[in-house]
Image (cartoon, rainbow, N blue to C red):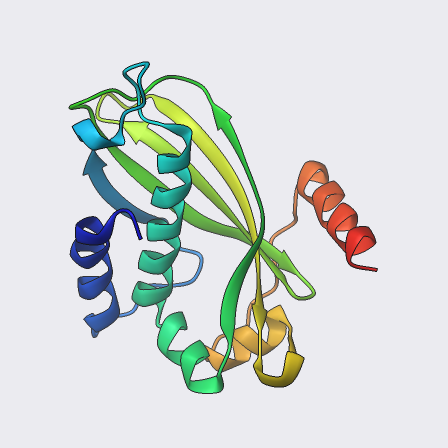
Length: 175
């Protein structure tokens, strides 16, 4: 992982936290653009945004208790889809936060939204991420199974038509 020290700073407190947050809560990680995060054009490189969404998902899973519950069952999260909208540049030494929320689910897929927000409150980038869980021996882990493993009973909020279209495309490609 190219953000190893940030990973330790974010993941360890999340993983060892005794108080779990709710699945639908907004989860936030804070950081700043370091010199090594920049590309030759002087702004945070596109690949770094993806690395930060990985950190944000690990924070989410640690704080909600999902990581422990899923590992106990032999389930692994797999990112199937991620898209970004880059609205403004983040530059060294700008501070920002990544806000992550679970926006819904369908079948075997969970949909997350990430927003990169600078200290001035402006959104600099947004990401839609679709993940699924895989189990041992190719077990199809559904969102309902995941909710049951976490001891919650929730219905998915309505998904936007754009997200539904992406999910349909993923289903068609998997067939």
